[in-house]
Image 1 (cartoon, rainbow, N blue to C red):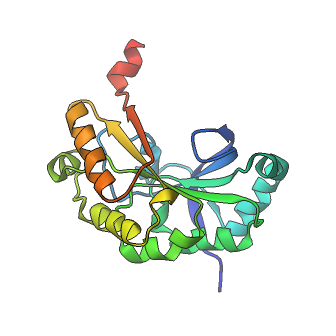
Image 2 (cartoon, rainbow, N blue to C red):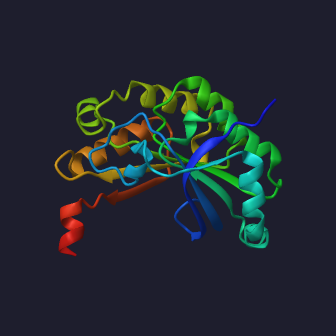
Length: 211
């Protein structure tokens, strides 16, 4: 089978503590089903943005320069975006070809077909999931699409007993949710057995300009 070629708009080495254990390289894939108001990587939606097109083998070859860092720290590759789970074939090709001791992490909104989740969940070390907000109206207003798939996929993960693979990001989103909403999202996710959470606040362009 011919390897899938994907569009990559970011290839960042030597990341520590923000994208999984140890030293990681973050590979950001182009494209996303969401249209978030405060998108942190808006270039993932820009059809004119100059991306690199790479196969899994090419990504691994370029990442081998950091092999010793990955082995010494328990790090590896983190695939983000955009929405990396739009490309499960590419993710599986990475896992099949990369050194066994490297970890593979995914940063995702989980708003993709369930078949995409099933294809990668067993071979992934950590799923870093930005759920935006579990309230369907808040989610729809912020992302412009429904969170039905996200909720269904989280329930699938819970039913499989894979909650410990997951870090759930719980953002406070200015003008969209509040601390009470964030706490309600956390409480609901706890009923599904999730225990690892990352609370933080989005910084809007206005707030960034004031700092």
